[in-house]
Image 1 (cartoon, rainbow, N blue to C red):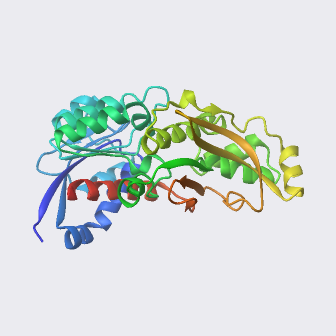
Image 2: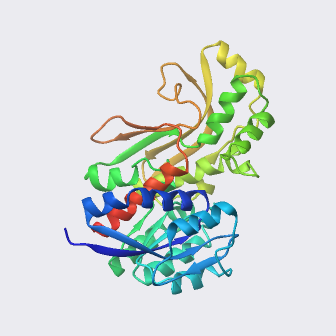
Image 3: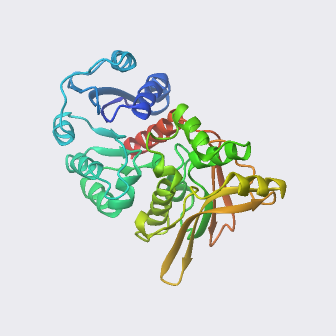
Length: 338
């Protein structure tokens, strides 16, 4: 095995970035033994704890320890300046998502690709708003723009279609793509109000301080837009997805459904029609005969209908930052193996 040392930089070092750092350390020997890969971290940039760049290598365990203590890593630095001076071969980007424009992540990933870095993101925004541009730029520069973790954390959806299903045409999909609302609805079944269920989701760190992205269906809509854009080849923005959240569902409706042996789920669908794709996110009543019925907690599911495989489902059980980190690790291995 020919050894190659790959220089890595992290733009965004919150829960996902730190989980990726820990996963890289845990998989260090496997990467070397199986793929001949060793790595050196040359840059880490955070939203609130400054940035550090060292071309000779940052001691990753020390950086992780500093973050867990809440210490600063160094001076604050603009994202573009960081990308241009980190001297990495792979950029891992995991900053907060911007549903409406995908910025500033799009600019950061474009800058990385222009410098011939592989650009790996966990961010849905750039996939929805700049997929074609960034993919074409990566091809011209001889590198990769990968984003496995943008939808369903580490479950292999994009790479499944890219690698394992050549020639298959995606006709439709249906599923639960927002795990936070799934948990909220489950707790409302147990008698909590929407506010109580949201507060619980916030307390365990899966709902944002402003939960409207989940509750009003924006997070689900942007995931639908990403899947349609990449897997169906039809550019779609979250604003183009017919969207209804769970805000108007009452505890009474939820307990009524339960006594009828049904459950409310926030369901995502997209269907190829002549010349276009019809996509929506809305609460639906599902019965025990539906594969969505048994998807509990923060789990998610998507069922694909293709022209060659009538029904193919992927279920992901209770993901966390570690599963998102794994999607980024898989992208890293696939990118550098070429």
